[in-house]
Image (cartoon, rainbow, N blue to C red):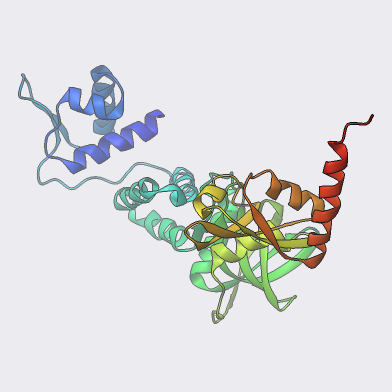
Length: 307
């Protein structure tokens, strides 16, 4: 745990209970009482009224009846902190609780920016991808304000109606309605340049589930071949074996699931499913069933000892 994260954790603990002893705080934070004293001084330097009692019965507490001052972060630091928390929000409640605390102590001028980001972001896979904060905030504001966005993508200028930002286990994506293609499209943020929000407002269209749409696009639609398998294993087990950006796993029964994936080579998909170690059936495409026969013969021949 870094210093900044630890100091924020200390502030959270002090907000939860009226009085904490030094050893109690040290135990919760996994540090020494000396480190706790230093972190308390850091909070005081930031303007938080932390009082310390003397003697065996003493302890640390926030000043009674006093409002907490704003957290002293500049714009880039606040946005970077929010980005890190939002990218990890899919992993559990901790990131969401931290984001809520950040919202309470941010200066008023930054709250709307962070809230715009929070309302425009979804995730799958629980990763923490790197991201250009300026691009992210430009698109988040465009999603919030329902204004068109424009950017260069793989050499082409694209004009879109931005809907949601989605964080995967490896990258950030924008789900938007592409006005030039007249359809929903997924865009990788790291492939964008010259990103800007336009002044032209739009009326939101009926939209697909952002996280599910982007995950399926990343896992299958971008490839030459798409495949669907019925796997006889619990969805939770299979999800733990496959990166979220490599396949969509949907539970069908408590002991079985559907796996949707894609690749430019059918044998590549098939071998990856085989290596999961579960019984499975090919649902589609039909030609993949033929590849099963071909690979089965090849493996049988490879295991035959020549005399």
